[in-house]
Length: 619
Image (cartoon, rainbow, N blue to C red; front, side, top):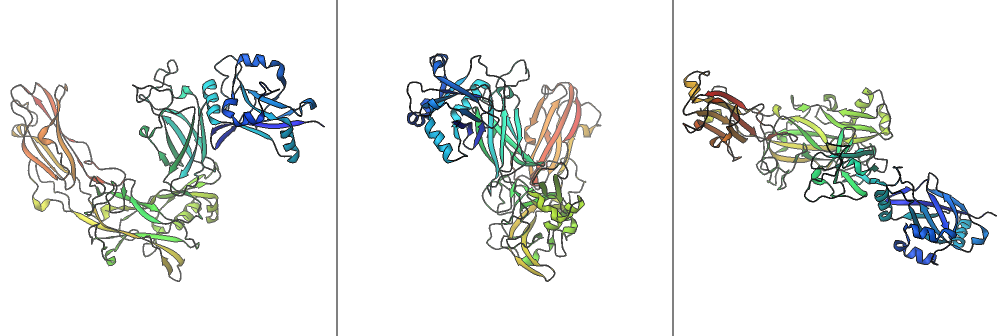
């Protein structure tokens, strides 16, 4: 009977990231220095080592055979009967590592001693179980060192999960970047599998690129005064155009080694249509929460958003999460409504429910269509792999309840599918429950265009504060035809939200030009006149520069440094101190400004370029 020793070789990249060691030569020796299996297995750190030329020469006569690992890292070796009671040393010659980079940088053969085994014990285990195979996993410290030091093979193994549920996110594209002082390097990208696992292989050439590459390569560490050899790695991840992870170089893991093991998580949910989870309104856009509190994104008691005291304008996205169905399998619906009656956000009471009469989907122009979710195929398909789900007026019933199930079914039908095909897709929660147009609520009149530069805005023409309360409701639909519903705990009211859609009122002039003509050169004292007004002014300044840029400065009394200031008006702002402050040249005077208006994604400045006044100064 033939005595076949079956075995396999694997290497740890991370604890849960193991790769097969294929196409390498396995060597079998009679024991060297009379090591016993017990000693070798209990002292793996001392046993596993690089075999030097001197040791190879000393053990030449002890070699009894060789085998090759296949594509799965498996090998088989026939043992002569005279060695059935012997112990064998096992080595391997490492000529390559996954994913098959070039040959080692050194010319000599790389031979590593693994361990010593008892032939009799291993064959006995194979007799007891036909599926048994001796397996050796090289510890990640050794295997990563071999990969990186000898083959310049660097690797990143990781998982992408949902931060809240810890469920894996499949089919996402993960990109690894190296933060550099000059230009960040793209180390590579990979797609997550059904377990959220991804792997990115790269070499040092990928993070040592410079503007002179490929002639000169070097790692340009952002902390260039303390040069280190490893890359500083940060990650981006996206799924069907939705950003899941958006790290920056500030998040970089500094000077990583040959193997990097990471766990990334995303707040964006990627769920099966049948999953149930708590539904809630949690924010406005990506910047603000929808709650009163002291954290930076929260609303304060008065109704200002975030610690920057922003006010809402334009179209805002009301964000959060909503399951398609309840635990009982019934559809979920939700709605948003607005009241003109408000209370401070720190008040334990809420405004009267009867006042929430401006319902999104019913009140004119309050609803804004937009993407509320995306469908992504569970198994990739080149056709209809991704379907965007848009909200539509038809998704609201007569009372303003929004049915996202209806929106999804409409998206499937429009794509040429049927509602039953939803089972083929996962849902990417876009976080947007609904979008709302604040301009449909605000009514304050703009400042009339009748006031000149330097002229005050009368109190009767100033813009008043407009506050609103926003309510979120959610319900389980038991039988809509029979008007049977179950209101779900999870609705909420934000007592006070300040909104504004008025532009800044800005006027700018040069006093000396107004006294002559706008085309005449001027000399001597130069005086600016300006009017800058908005109830939520954030900044404003005057800036003067000459055509030659020898003069390039802010005008001190035109700078607003107090966010509570709502207006800046002056008719005698001196730009120079004659006779030697300004030289003969053309000058540009600009009035810059911005407000604290914000839509939860982007802030509003002054709605356009700064006001500019040109003049020619003649000494």
